[in-house]
Amino acid sequence: MAPTKEVIKHHLEQLENEHGRLTAEIVVQDAKNPDSPLHDAGFQWDVEKAAHQQWLDHARKLISSVEYVVRTERHTISAVAWVRDPRLVGTKQQGYVQVSKLADDQTLARQSLDFEITRALAVIKRVQSLAIVLNLDARLDGMIDELMTLKPPSPDAPAVVQ
Image 1: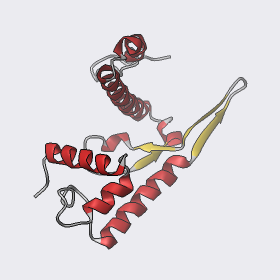
Image 2 (image 1 turned 90 degrees about the horizontal axis):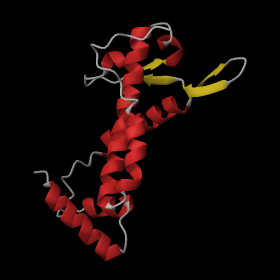
Image 3 (image 1 turned 180 degrees about the horizontal axis):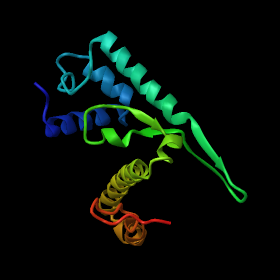
Image 4 (image 1 turned 45 degrees about the vertical axis):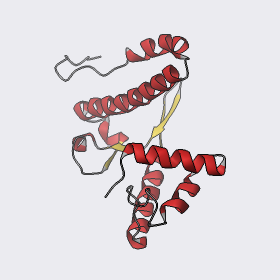
């Protein structure tokens, strides 16, 4: 049975107190013990399956490491060469599509950009929560307001044609 978030939190605090800091290595070593409350917290203990998961993670890193470069008279722009296929958002399927192919389909291009902006907003919200907890939210408010104007339009909003 998977431990509750409270049990996980308490055990991680114990590990930090024991070791002076918390690292992924410390957590894994502890979780290997079948008596640890972390043992059933989502770790893959089947070595073959764990290796396969690691290979998939590495493949994702390889895919995202390739750049797509566009040169104009004034600028050279580098972006990732593959992005999550916007046709798969909201599904459990995984897949990537070349950015160069998205450029030929403005609907998919917009959906891809909206997905990336949504991901960025999630990071911003995490930063905002952390700023509040650390009592630094006043400093962050202005920057967040400015960035929130980049939020993708609703699907019903008319497309901007240039």
